[in-house]
Amino acid sequence: MSSIKIIRRFCIVLVAVMLIPLFSVLAQAAPGQDDISNQQILILCGFQYGIPVADAYIKSMVDSLKAEGIPVNNIHVTFLDLNRNDTDRHRFLMQEILAETSRGHHIDLIIATDQVAADFMVKEAKDLFEGVPLVVSYDEEPAWEGAPRNLIIAAASDDVEGTVRYAFELFPNTKKVVIIMGADDEKAPFIDRLIAALESLNKQVGIEKTRDLTYAAMLEQIAVLPPDTIVFYGSYFQDISGETFVPAVVANTVGQVANAPVFAFIDMHIQQGLVGGSVVITEKLGQQVAQAAVNYFTGTLVLNEEPIRIEPDFYPLFNWQQLKQFGANPNLLPENTVFLNKSPTLWDEYKELIITAAFLLAGLAMLSIILIMRNRQLGRAREELLMYSETLNERVAERTAQLEAKNRELETFTYSVSHDLKAPLRGIEGYSRLLLTDHAENLNREGRAFLQTIRRSAGQMSSLIDDLLTYSRLEQRPWQQQAVSLQELVSSYLAEPVEEIAARGGSVEIDLPEITIYADRDGLALALRNLLDNAAKYCNKTEAPAIRISGLVKERSLIIMVSDNGIGFDMQYHDRIFGIFNRLHPEGEYSGTGIGLAMVKKALERMGGRVWAESAPGKGSTFYLEIPLTGSDGASKD
Image 1: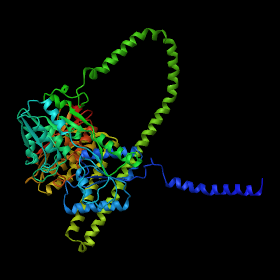
Image 2: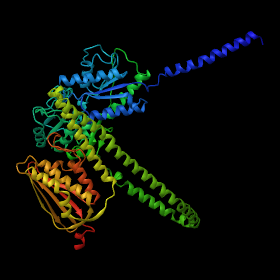
Image 3: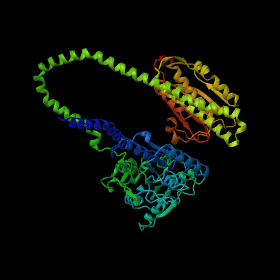
Image 4: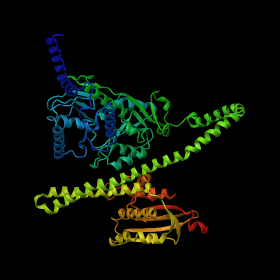
């Protein structure tokens, strides 16, 4: 081979070696068209966090996007809270927050979950995220004030006409229609369509709206409706007095109070106990929007000047028990109807018994064969039993180790909550206190008020963390049944709060029997302390607060009663007051975290007892603790 050929081949090899790193860099810098892991999405909600429909819609979208490979850190969710804070100042603050997002992230797609968010995007935020496509969740194209964007319309309109049709098919003799709506809903899209749909029936039907009523007056009206009346629930964010509400929570109350069938246009409202309607399934719509975003990122969906529409599917969604309650015939509904709380058929109710009986008959038929093979199977069983006994201890040890590991993980989590989460709260409280004390002259009145609000919020958050930790430890710690003197327990654990109540001008009367019971001392003390604090809180606005703690020994149990002359409550909310975070009054009106009565219920359940209450608005409350006397002195005396 000539020297020239050798040099030529050497040069080719050298160039190839030099180009390999370059190709590698290019391959990393230019991912395939289907790689969407670097895409950034901004989800805008016009309402506050905690609106069930919006939260479910957003969760469905986020879960679907994550499943398609978009990291959760690339999904930015912003709640504008414009339904409660529709002021120029708040809108300016929201605009600044979005401006900060635009500076810190390269957003590739914006999803507006409602018309409020979309209107904000095309007005106040029109100059942000230039050229980024927009997805809106209602039927119409936004009224652009700036440059139009490429648009995807996820038509989430209500099937008002379908719901009206189902309502009159189920209740053809209807003479009156009541439309539940808030004071801010007069221009809501469903109103005109609902009126038009009712008029198209060519029936003499009277129509009433609740727009001009307070929330309490609206509930009073729907509780005493005349026969042959049906109700349509639209939305309810605010009443005529200006008080704001969560529509799904209102739907739940409406379903309990109304004495006529209530139809709705949103699936999650129906799930709160209403009769039903033709609706878009929120979870499915969220999945459709997420899939459209993925298709756009991968190039499957090409956007242009004309909006792309995503047409949702409507489903008849009905509550079986509500239909039966109001005498409707479910068989009038389509075959694809989705039923909630459907009564089981005979097969559904007894299928386990039928299947068990069939197996028993088959077993009897096989008994003769089993007896013939008995000796062989017996020998095999002995071998299997020996093998099982050899591994049983190992399995028990393994399961014990797993349980101990889980307990350690729970303890680590509790430690993290009590230390790591409270540390920044202490920092917030400390620095805000320093600002108020050392730099007050540099702050105007509004600034000082903001800092006071920050300190109160930090204190409330700290109290909430403490109560949540106490509640979680009720499950973790072992319960120690021991002899407890009831009067000694009350005098030692309740002396301090009793003195505090007396110092505020109140009175506490204690009339308990002299009895020693077997119970968990700390758990019972926690329950009594929380009930005393609860009674003091809700009668502190009474001229002469009075609390009475008494007891009654029955045949098998001890009942302790804590009574007060406070504001009381409506018994229809009895079960709610013992749940976590279930408050019957606004947070600013009465203090507390909404966990105290839940801890009382948990403590009594752990001791094998129970707790309940009796009350009426304005007439005080009485809470009852029933503790079993099994193993106690009281039981032995019987």
